[in-house]
Amino acid sequence: MGRIEEFLKKRQQDNLLRVLKPATSRGQGLRLFKGREYIDLSSNDYLGFSTHPKLKQAAKEVVDKLGVGSSASRLLSGDLDIYHRLEEETADFKGKERALIFNSGYQANLGIISALCQRGDVIFSDKLSHASIIDGIILSGAKFFRFSHNDSNHLEQLLKEQRHKFQEALIITESVFSMDGDKPALGELVSLKEKYNCKLMVDEAHATGIFGKSGAGVVEEAGVVKKIDLIMGTFSKALGSFGGYVSGSKSLVDYLINTARSFIYSTALPPAVIAANLASLELVEEEPQRRRDLISNADYFRKNLKEAGFKIRGSSQIVPLIVSDNQKVIKISQELQKKGYWVFPIRPPTVPTGESRLRFSLTYHHSKEVLERLIKDLCQSQFLNI
Ligand SMILES: *Cc1c(COP(=O)(O)O)cnc(C)c1O
Image (cartoon, rainbow, N blue to C red; front, side, top):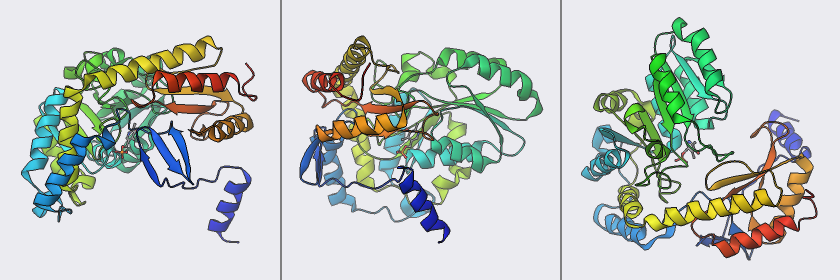
């Protein structure tokens, strides 16, 4: 048996084989799979923008005008003024001088981190960092230290021991963590980056469109926009479309245009995607009630689950319910799937051993009534004896 077959067999035996489950249709927080409708609790379409008429219209108009493909990298003939308009709007939205669009959030992290850091430099990153951050770090060749999750004391200890041995230093965190739904103490990270002469990069993938007065994210909410050197994020989650971005100084963006390989060596995003992104930034401004409702519903959901005795984490629309036991978490998610909820068990190595969980990703389409029913179903679960 070859390596591939052995791998697949082992994954199957361990109940860890990943398989695809295509929906036949989707929208309004629902998902049609094998003829059955599920309430989608695994989607990042937090504000329901992906099917919003305004985004659809914007994309259609640009397809009719400019076609589908963008023909080349932006540094060759792929560049269009619409990308620059989006970059100006993104920079304004984020409160920064400039912004640069990447083909996805994944490619943004890969390109930014590997362009910014090199051998002889050092990167300090939260232990729960997203795979795209880790991959960017590996590609950079810089020395890498992980600090305990949201633990500024541990970060300072590492900075004290290591910072002086290296040239440039970069600290990276997320502003809403994808598996825990919690936020870092950005003020503390800012103090440390100043004290130890580092750059600070914040990944706002799950926060953009939701937190902060104008929906710009947790950096805005925490009042530290000016202090963060690089704010990156994606148009693919709450903004309902596709594509990554980074915002920061003019020199940072000029540098990345010249050095970020995932920017230079990939065809520009289709113009229709850019038009939808522009429309989504307008929508964030026009429909603040969506994010307010989402935050209030998520608070309600977490509060009620905690009162029912469940072990709940986070302070955002991502709500993890810790079950610990691997077999149990599988059984509970199967039970919920039978009741029509699209929710999956998250197990090691995605999360630390002993911290298996159900991860509920709430969106604008999950009304209080839906959440109440879900809370009731969780309380009645035969596997969740509290
Ligand atoms: C989803 C995600 C990304 C990648 O964004 P895409 O646009 O989906 O490629 C990067 N960082 C974090 C923290 C994410 O959750």
